[in-house]
Image 1 (spheres, rainbow, N blue to C red):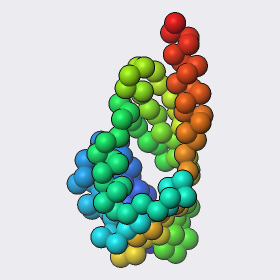
Image 2 (image 1 turned 90 degrees about the horizontal axis):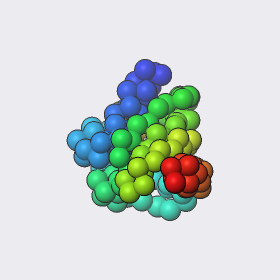
Image 3 (image 1 turned 45 degrees about the horizontal axis):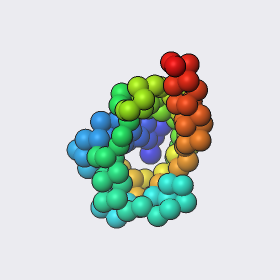
Length: 129
């Protein structure tokens, strides 16, 4: 897999998270896809449900770095989120690791700085007060 092929797959996947639109995921997730976000096993169906219920508004995800090694890739990303009830923003760094077979993601692992997001939301809200 080339760097540009890997980036295209991940851009499509991340667009699914930005929009909640299942069609983006359909194009890049294998039927047997599983991931281990925050150490918890999540099936493809669970991921699709979670993405459809994503609470943040104006979510954008930027790829900051991407490394491809055979059928695996590692990404460093930044998510830009707006809290729906507080109307405050946060920039959340994260790491995503995936395995690709025949152009489809079959396994994923990842962590995002949830505590940092909460702290940013709290700080932004206190500045508004």
